[in-house]
Image 1 (cartoon, rainbow, N blue to C red):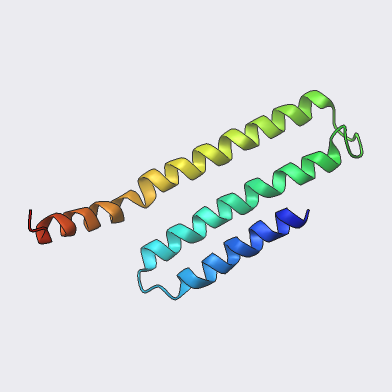
Image 2: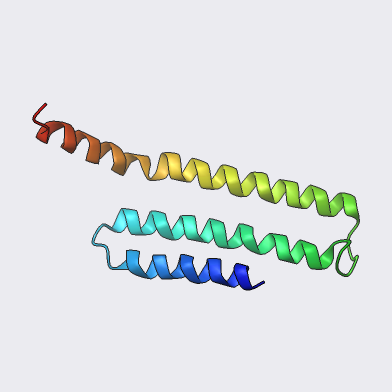
Length: 103
């Protein structure tokens, strides 16, 4: 649990640094990525408590299925948002770099 808290402290510290950024679209993109990470990381301890190792409130099949589903959704959502949501800013930066290049 200590590492869980440390990761979130790092994420929210990074988010606080990004808030000072003047670019609103980048700040909004980082907020969404942090939210996806936060929500997906919270599923695993909850399922551990409710699953067979904790309270045994849900069956093992349900626990494994939900963890698998949460894992897929979080990774796919994070990856797609990172690829399509923030990619347009990277393209603008590359175009500017190509115009100012001396080579």
